[in-house]
Image 1: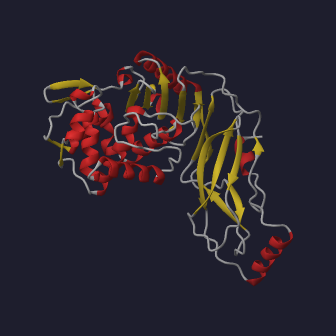
Image 2: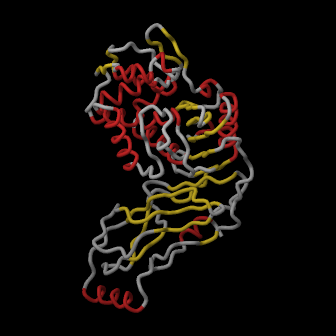
Image 3: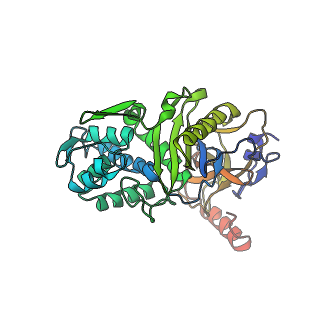
Length: 388
């Protein structure tokens, strides 16, 4: 049975789809020394590799990606300009400056620095002083800015992450997951393409001190063009990286390694493996019906479901042996239903791991049915219960 035919065989009342499409692919081709890891296809969200991807971990400076996401959001909305200038407060200078022992911009106390240069420092140098200056400049205090960070995390569905500062400096209550960091990276790449090239800038100079980009994978010739490294003694070494090698974009997160060299090697291995091992299956074309679900009391009994554009899957080359797939929704669906309305998700599993969750939308408008249709569906509900 082909993937498409299995996915398309849906009960007329929209029962959760659970057709087996051959033996599940076991994740045995690759193993990482990282304590936490995930490799995700940027476009579809397909997970190609995961290891403790949903376990809480200390983010270290990878937390600065959320700081940057808030700053980019303000820039895009026009509430902030690259030319705006923020003060380097005593807090920023003391906790993130040259005397702090951590990553720093080497900004002078009480100096004013443009938002553009603060962003460059955070991305390229991982400057803690620059991160705090941005937080205070936007939120008034770092604590207020952190509330904005967590609000944005909630809006993005990063439900397993909590931020306590703008820098990633150790805090026992600040925890994230590798999956959340990967999805945060996808959000940044998709939403702020006009700023994304900052992540691949090789160096940045401030106060007469030139510092190279902490992401050494940029120089490895494997298509990496972002995003952020991190390290603390308690968390180990980590990285969020993205590559366009092989004609598609992947996002990788690895954390909990013992050295810079191990971080570089393990990240390079995972990215190279991902770009060479998987093939794309063009499963559903743009506008092609994935399945149907019932509409309680609608003018027609069912409504077709489509993706937001084509739905592609990635499976190991030479093998079409994935997948378990289900269409999942909360029913009953009540009319009216508007064309393009979000109704359900296509859940795709590989070896019992959820590897892809694709939103599905109504393919047509469904108005409320006549009294006969409503009575018929009411009878079904009374006698059988609504299948959902």
